[in-house]
Length: 257
Length: 360
Image (cartoon, rainbow over all chains, first blue to last red; front, side):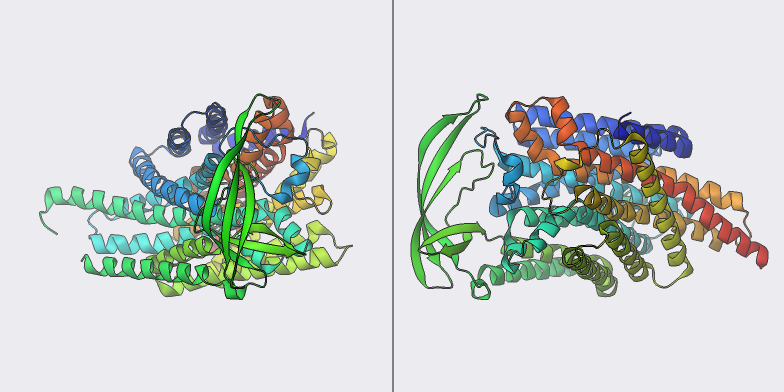
């Protein structure tokens, strides 16, 4: 039997065993996201407006990741709002970076894989580079937004009449912890994914200048930085949204803070 | 109220601009010639249709380049296809790394360091504003330390031909995890437990992967499709997986352990089942989104190749099998690690904590 199929079954089994209903939902979410990316590929390949396709797919992926991940509607709504704001900011930033940095497509390092393939394919790889950057950050943004919102809403639940400043203080402490581990996850993930490329650069004795300028490596670094910015901004925006919502609820009772 | 944040934002903007400005003018640091495009004339030279019916346009540019660290000007020709799969279109103001071989000068790469530095500064600046200087410096220190250790491991891998790749990078992963956790959490019981559960889970995950690969004789897994191969691809894949799994597992374990320690602070005399249930319920909440994080990274990575293959008339089953193969495998393995981390962490911390409660 196919090794990936077996591993996929093991993953499904474990998810159901550990997470029960929630595990099954998480697995379905993964499958849905795969389908969403599949649709994105097909639509961009058919020359639909890439910006609209990327934006809509991002919304769908975020919604799946967040609403299938947890049940508490108050938490998920804030997390979703946060992710949408943050991804919108990152998309603009990614577009700017892509315009000046031109991270699209392949480089001479790929020539072996590209042998025999047509390079004049009539599809703008500028847009594909943007899609790569935006999709890479979606997961990290959704995760950070969920984590901070869930933790903060728990704090609010325990002590409902907290002042804005002290709630912000809590948000800062919790946010700091989430930031530390989330940034490490992203860092390890990107490092792992790019191990062969980095070894290639070192082994073939690329000059220092290429480490900071070569297309393939800098594209990865930019993607990682965007992801880290995404985590940071998510924590920021989510804290702000939670505090604001909490203050509005309190204002019903007490006017003026 | 509004004054302080505005001031901070101005400082960040200034820092970003300063770094960008410095890196735009750092040609003197480069050994090779660095040029800036000062004038471009371009015209379409060819309208192509490839064998798969893709229409594209090929342009030829005449670039006038001022060489910044040689004080000369030169003219170069550059051709690019509109799709820019592997060719680049250059604009006035773009800086280029050049290489002179004999008489001829050609373009090595676009100079991207200013944009990279600007973005890095933006991130670090926002990080400093958010979590103060102290916490930021620990986090940045752990990242820098990780990069240094990583470089060290790569040197070992490259210079020692007999080195066991998986072993080298497993030890690296271990060091990375220890350093990051120690710097983020401090030398505490919490850190020790997180580290232990992370290592146990990662080992279990890798064992499952090895067992499945052995039993199925790696059927359907195409290590040979890996890009940038300079050594045995399967070994490198395992090393990649260890690093990726470890990072994700560490994240999840850290969250679960932190919550279980919170439970202990509230009430020190809890039973094992309390910790077990508490750990599971937190773990369930985060495992889905965490698998997603890695899934997005691994799949996004494959996108350019997927598009190129589609445009070259390959069908989806071939693309899934050849291009997305290792990305999917890596996602699935990481997923297994992330899910396994939930019961493993709950059991380990539960046992330690409930025993501690009995002893007191």
